[in-house]
Length: 338
Image (cartoon, rainbow, N blue to C red; front, top):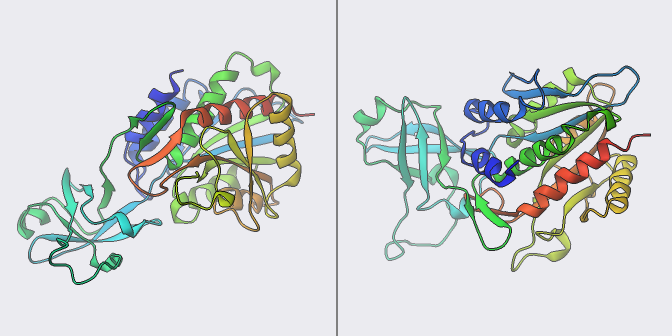
């Protein structure tokens, strides 16, 4: 597997929360070779890896495939598009961003930016102030764009120096890639797995973990691992609140997570000499693990987080080694059930 090529394809495919059709199809294509029964159901991609054997613990591997973006709310008489946020946008970066509006056809636009010579203040835009310029008139726009159409940011996956890469939606397409990498490592070793394994690439995580909630109820796992991202240290950040890029996946520890699964993952990493870090949280994790833990009768849930810089921007940055370390840890953990 060329994991960087896989991640590029995932990252470059658009899929704003609530409009994941394209990314679902892309993720399904990658999952099918490992999970022949994989399908799209309620905007989630679900598949079974290996045989289901009665009596074995059932584990769910999850990563969400949606991304933050915007939605069209109004077209002004002057031909400008007003939008609302879909998920938690960093509004500081919005002025002058290139975007794509997904109407009857895809059209490009830019978020309006007042020149500094004319600006009366440097305050961060409120969402109701965010306006998109496409160059079209109102009449032209109304033939292409409708209220409720989704808007995504423009950008392209790019390598940086060393093992770092930048791109759109690395939150959480890198988690998706790490699970695929784990399946690749295990594809010829299915007899060594001690779990029944279900894979979920879930939708609408950025809108409250909705895809995880509905799929977990149906799948009903004993154990669930949410593979997501967390804050990667960059200049000026509080290092105590961040992981370091290139130093391994961040194993979650929290009152809302299973201490047993956290400990097992830590022991697996130690025994197999897989780099890892700890991510200590004092309550909910704001990941799909929060949904898995309270699903039906509950599941033993844990998080594995890939350190990521510049979260919820078009230029997110990760280290590819962390994607590999995460996949390797998952693969070794699946072989280690008692």
